[in-house]
Length: 461
Image (cartoon, rainbow, N blue to C red; front, side, top):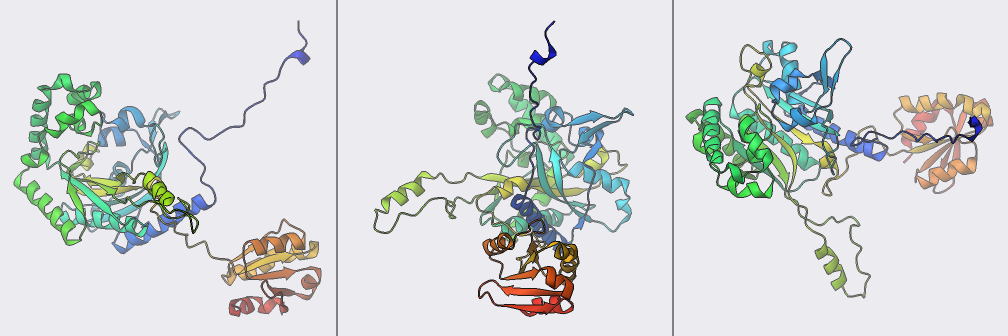
């Protein structure tokens, strides 16, 4: 029997984050926070209030609402079964959960419409791609309790306002209408009839979709299906008078707001609950990134090299960064006794923040530090937190390195961060209840009593 000492022990690999999920650290975290603060500010201005639904929902919220035959439900949901036998899923989208919360919390008894915004992580088990991970973040807007076309306009206006504040210069609303139930049923019958005549020319996925969820045939991106899609019946030709009027009003609102739009007659969105208006917002920004993306040719050299380098950078293709639509029948699908008309949109925050046109917005919590706090010796370290608390209550932004002991090391950090003043708190100052305030540019300094420190620092420039 071989000795245990001869056995090779395998080193355990350190754990990593799950595929398609990531740690958000440092400046990246603040970019997300800055986005949320700006989006929240605009949403509140337009009359929306906050809601936060659980990350875990009962499975039927999505199987009943989103649809059994959608990719989200068939392939992409993270599901689990509790010890009590309840089937839960990590929420793959926000609208169905908000409608569930609207019904459960008695929002029907409030003045209508109810306008809500939300932000947070969502989960879909799909192949990770740039700007769309398996754990992704969305900012959503919902208006529940009104069938009026002005609600559609408010959703689109608020969404485009948020995106423009983030730096997008050119946005296009690709819009279509599926009509009401009567319109949709007539359209689906004609669509099925058309595609059945050409079923052998469809890809395998579309042949299955034609049986279970015909509208999703129009979502197909396979090359062989595109000629058929181009000639397919159009939903606008099957609208009831009410649906026609609703769509006409939505387009008039877009024109009055000077929002660029394109009627995309094949746009259906891949979720069952949509009715009437559906839309996707794309960026048409095609400018080459400016900030250091291509080095300028040094003076005196042939500028042709620079022109060729810029020409070699392909323009940004249109990118869908937000989408939404009306869902007048979703509440009944979730068990409501009567329909609750609603309309909403969601913004793909990860996709927005990775776009080269987006300007990072610092969250309000981030303020340029005015002073750098330096402590020397154990007695000073003991009292350091009390000094920091005085400055915190006075709302004076600062940086510190309490874990460091060397004066030179702490001064070096202050200089690297280009902080104009240093507060030096040593053994003598701890006994005297004073602090030395040092100008980092002129090297001049003054001793200030602790009781006067906050007022002194506020006055210096």
